Image (cartoon, rainbow, N blue to C red; front, side):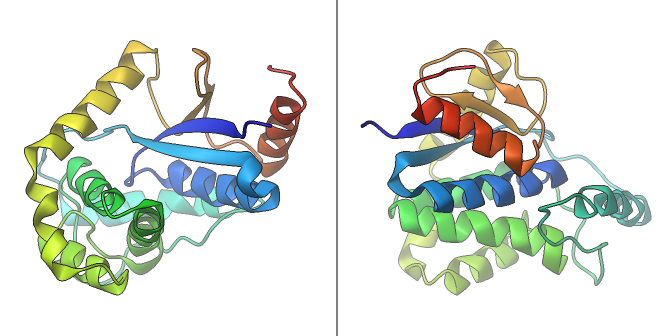
Length: 205
C-alpha cells in the first residue's frame, strides 16, 4: 500500500506551525512508514522589516495561547538579548540547505529551528545562530554556505507562490499530495489522526 503523503506549508516564525509540527510528527511516529510529511515554505514576513524589541517581546506573550492547548510543544516568552528576527526567509534557506544532505539532516535542522525560536529565545534569522544550529545538528561545516545558493531562494519563493495560488492565506496549511483542498490552522491531534486513518482506509474527506 502506498503511504499517505501530506504536504505542509509552514513558517518557522509562526507559533501555530510549531504546534502543528509537534502533533503531525506524533501522528507520523504512530503510523511509521505509512505516513510521509513534506514541508514547504510559506513566508509570513517575506522581507526584512524594522521591529521594535519591546513590542516583539510583548508579542511573544501571545505564545501562551498555543502553549495552553492540549498536545502542545513548549514555548517561552522571549528572554535574553537576541532578536527580534528579521524575516521569514533565512530559516527556510537553512532548512533547505540541510535537506540537500538528506531527510534526516533536514529533520534535525527543521526541529532545531522551531525549538530554538519558540523554546530557547534564539534569533533563527541571524547568521551566527544559524551556524551554531547547523553545528549542533552535526552537519558538515563545509556545507553550511549552501544557504547562499540562489537556487534555494528561488525554491523557497516558488513554494510560497504555489501556496498563494492554491488559496492558502495563512499557516499551517496541510494538503493531501495530489489534491487541491487543504486544512488550515493547527488542528487537534485527534483531527490529524482521524484524517490520516480515513486516508489510509481510502476515504478522502
